[in-house]
Amino acid sequence: MDNKFAKNEKDYIRVYQEKGYVSNFHFEKGKLVNNRTKKQYNPEDVYIVAENRYEGMSNPSDMSILYVIETNKNEKGTFLMDYGPTADFDTAEFFKKIPEKNISNKENINK
Image (cartoon, rainbow, N blue to C red; front, side):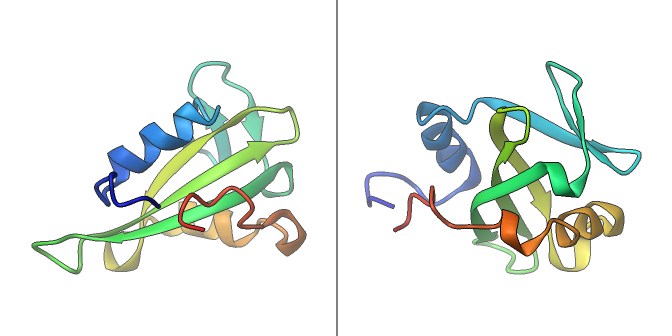
């Protein structure tokens, strides 16, 4: 990522939105759900095309991960999740179940 961007989640989300990753998702009852369209996805329906991890500057245990995703219904967006000691177990398990063939780093802006 270019030094002109601060290294925090909001700045990264903005850059990905400019690249067309405009959908926002939340996790509900074992599914990833598009906030706007309400379409629901199982792990095999989701493609991770980039991920960025963050540690809090003042508190290193404040950790999060930004997943940049595409779906089998051509929706593109982001999902921000806590990880480490504050992670939600069910959400973390969902992302662990995404098939390895559906994970790449092709859209990572840090390349």
